[in-house]
Image (cartoon, rainbow, N blue to C red):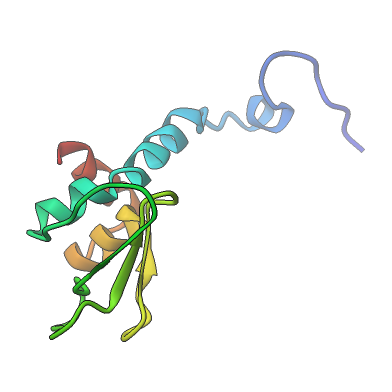
Length: 109
C-alpha cells in the first residue's frame, strides 16, 4: 500500500511524471463555450441569447430546422439524425479530426 506524499500536486502525478492536465482541460472548457462562434463559422445564422434556438442540422440536409441549440448549456441536439454535442463534437465530426486538433481549430474562430 502506498502512502500519499504531501505537496501541492496529486501524488500519482508527482510519482509518474505526468504533465499537469489543468491547462489542457481549461482549453477544452473554453472551446466548448464557443458553440455560437463555430456555428457562425460554418455559415449558420444564429442569434445568441437565452434559452433554445432551432436551426437546420449541420450534418444533414434539412428542409426545416430540426436541431435545437441550448445557449444556457452550449449544447446542440438534432432530433432527426440524433447528432448531439458541444462545439468540440461539432468540429470533430465536420472536420474529421481528433479532440486536440478540434480544440486548436476552435481557438482560431
